[in-house]
Length: 51
Image (tube, rainbow, N blue to C red; front, side, top):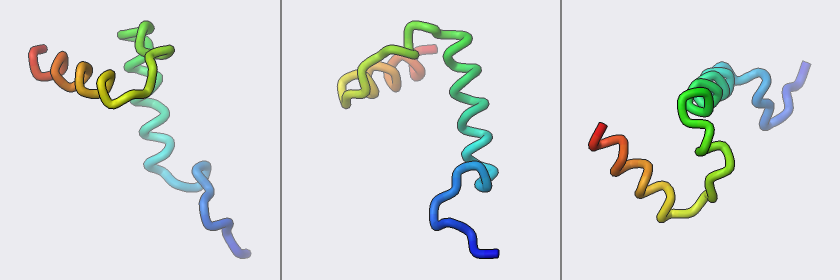
């Protein structure tokens, strides 16, 4: 049975990322609608360093 080249449902790490994302959004719901920009990512990294 040939598998498609990209099948996230068959890749275990994708399930892990989904769970982590779910937990982060539970703790910080404001991040769910945050813009996906370099500045936002830098701010999140800096906030994590300070925590």
